Image 1 (cartoon, rainbow, N blue to C red):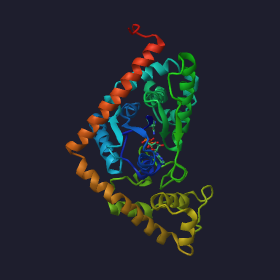
Image 2: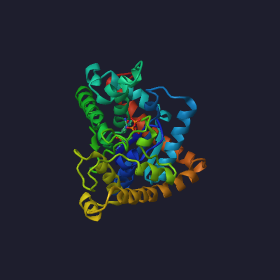
Image 3: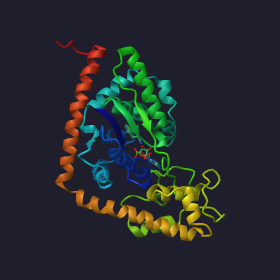
Image 4: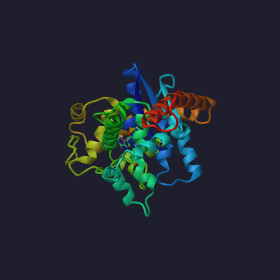
Length: 332
Ligand code: ATP
Ligand code: LTN
């Protein structure tokens, strides 16, 4: 069976950017690709590349696990697990670091952006893409569904896999990114040139999945647009309204042309009022399911089952890789 792998960091509250750009896509794929086995995880090891407070981290790990299921991941279709509970991720990351170069890691734009914002930069933040590559190569993923911002990390993963395949006789499947067309990038509501991010200090810049409906309405009403006043998609020149149209389109499935026709002659207020109801309607059932799950035994059972299956696949792979590299003793 071929594998699909992806993860999200428990670094903050999940917002509609991650949901529309990533989780919604996982849910679609689990139905569209019944012949693949899915490994979806909570990337808690990635989250500590920039140190986090213990209680906060614990809370966000569990919250993310419950939200994955609340958003529609089917635990019977998907192995859902917590990255740090499968030690092979760290083990393989080290082996990949011995096959990666400082120069190629220095070129990663996410590293450049994130390190600029830090007073001191950890080795973990620098080597982050090798841990991500380990997450993927450990399961021989054929496809990796991610947002467009992760494309460069996927390219690096492919480079490392090809390099090690040449050195160690085809040990890895070379993965391909699966990037959703529309919704691949949802922008900030306050600065539509920036991506909507859970680590943005400005809370008004995003809508979190657990936000109250009145907050959602308020955030959309105050979203930055322009002075043109028409509902027309033009990503380059009219980033604000185009971003709102993207959110509308990904949730309802309506194309930009359909939205332009529907809102011909209307102003921003009417469009924003409708969009707010579309978003509230999408998030309501997710929130209900989330509150049922968050303190349930069901959630722990799902994570135990996912972890056990992940460990089974991962350990087999690690043993094989160690053997190819020549670590330890030769197996009888
Ligand atoms: P941060 O905002 O803290 O940098 P992040 O939200 O980019 O983190 P993750 O939560 O790990 O990082 O991202 C999970 C997935 O969601 C990734 O595949 C990422 O590309 C996607 N994603 C995150 N934000 C957006 C967004 N605004 N639009 C579309 N996809 C997104
Ligand atoms: N780096 C990713 C999260 C992530 C991931 C992965 C995605 C960690 N490991 C493996 C896909 C596959 C991010 O910041 N969005």
